[in-house]
Image 1 (cartoon, rainbow, N blue to C red):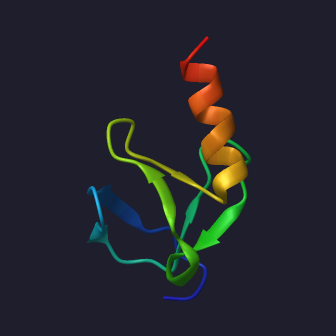
Image 2 (image 1 turned 180 degrees about the horizontal axis):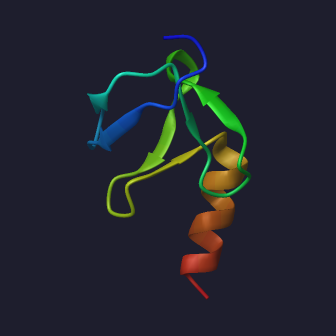
Length: 64
């Protein structure tokens, strides 16, 4: 399952794997995020973020 995009459902403190894969794509930067490194996401938007920087950018854009 190397280099396969996963499909996830983002929950408040975890995520559920809907389709097997090894990574997702950051909604802001487009960077590949290995599932074992995924720590930032938005439950309401159902989006993953590469790091706190991208998550902050999304929050800033939503507050405008």
